Image (cartoon, rainbow, N blue to C red; front, side, top):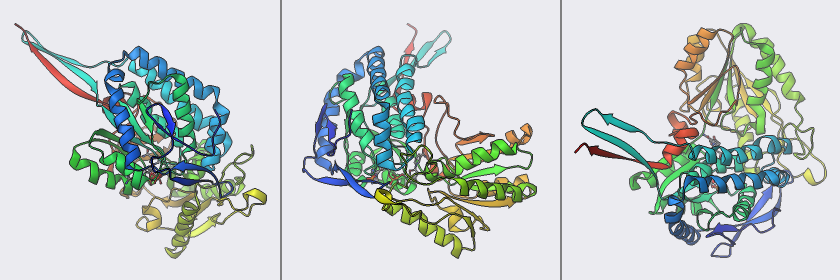
Amino acid sequence: MTPDKYIKNYIDGALVPAASGAYLDNYCPATGKVYSQLPDSDEQDVQRAVDAAERAFPEWSKAEPGKRFRILMRIADIIEQNMEEFARAETTDSGKPLAMSMSVDIPRAQANFRFFATAIVQFGSESHHMAGEAVNYTLRQPLGVVGCISPWNLPLYLFTWKIAPALATGNCVVAKPSELTPMTAYLLSKACIEAGLPSGVLNIVHGLGNKAGQAIVEHPVVKAISFTGGTATGKKIVATAGPMFKKLSLELGGKNPNIIFADCNFDAMIVDTLRSSFSNNGQICLCGSRIYVERPLYEKFRDELVKRTQFLKVGDPFSAVTDLGALVSLQHLEKVESYLSLAEVEGGSILCGGTRVEMKGEYETGYYLRPAVIEGLPLECRTNQEEIFGPVVTITPFDTEEEAIALANGTVYGLSATLWTQDISRANRVAEQLQAGIVWVNCWMVRDLRTPFGGVKNSGIGREGGNEALRFFTEPKNVCMKYG
Ligand code: NDP
């Protein structure tokens, strides 16, 4: 299962170039060099993919769940058997440390297939009994052809998080990974062929969001869109798909708060706060980017966080000692840097980091930035309101529980929040009031795939995970039978 220089679309069971024959450059963020090419697909390719999915749907949707289970489990096994190739491809494409690809991204991609393979053989539907009169039962039927569109930060992890439940429930899929990180999706197409997934059940179309992605969203046969990405793109998708009455699951941006009370377990908190700030270079939608600390603990916290941040090793993502690899693209690096300049204009002090790392040899032209901690910024400033999605956090003291909640809730986003306290009553009280789809208490990124996953406010619509995903990808139909 090796990466190829020329990535192909996966349509109707075959690996094919874009109909136009055009390709786009694929960059390796660690070196800043083009290392492969991906199809620059357009609406012709999406049309072919939709046609293939439509043809495959009658058989796949009626296949007994046990058959879908076996094929999805086989795909997971093939990913596992080729773990290192997948992980190397993920790191080459995204710049993230190989250790992270090996321990998080690729294991989670396998887990997504296994989780939804097993979930579908146990998935039931409801019945409602009207005593002495009638019985209602609910059929849960697949939607048809659905679109799955994912971002670059956790490429195969998020791609399969959508594809696996869509396939398990009997839908046929047209999917597009980010143009910045297409390689593991390409390897996935090879795994699907090897696993014997019937032709047309999954189709992967590579290319640009505003061309191939948009063509999926606006195609009239595509019944639902499951999308993870930025809020601005989410808005565009709603504008197109809303008037077409498509089912939408939108997992969008965040500006997540960490609230740290003085009574927390400091040692556990500081370790997890460093992780929640800078894992994957802060390029995880769940990273905590605004850190609020109860005043008596503030100075101790600030000094320790800065010390530990300065200690993080930024560099070659293939090295075992690297904590932070390269950012995903030059454009993204420049975007993050522009927020660092803005933070200073807005009156913030950069306590550490925020400068490029001078690398040697082949890595000289890669996209490396030292992680930054900023203090002294008010809630209302753009640095604290807009998603930066890089290795940048702001820290701010607070005095009361009410103030902490108001600060945490003071943006248009509402994806996740993290709370550190030993006081169980306060933990429950604050968790209840936080405007977020996910609240972690005394931990971060502890994930149980059965739980609802998603955001409130501008962080999205709908939930993924567990039964939520199975429900999203099925249409409930109530059948009411009156007694004779
Ligand atoms: P984008 O919104 O730019 O892109 C996401 C995907 O959508 C890509 O495949 C992109 O293609 C595609 N796309 C772009 N425009 C369109 C369009 N008009 N129609 C259909 N598809 C389109 O996000 P990023 O890739 O930059 O990812 C980072 C964002 O994702 C952050 O905001 C982050 O918070 C969010 N995110 C949210 C998560 C959540 O669970 N809530 C999890 C992870 C990330 P292309 O790459 O070619 O532009």
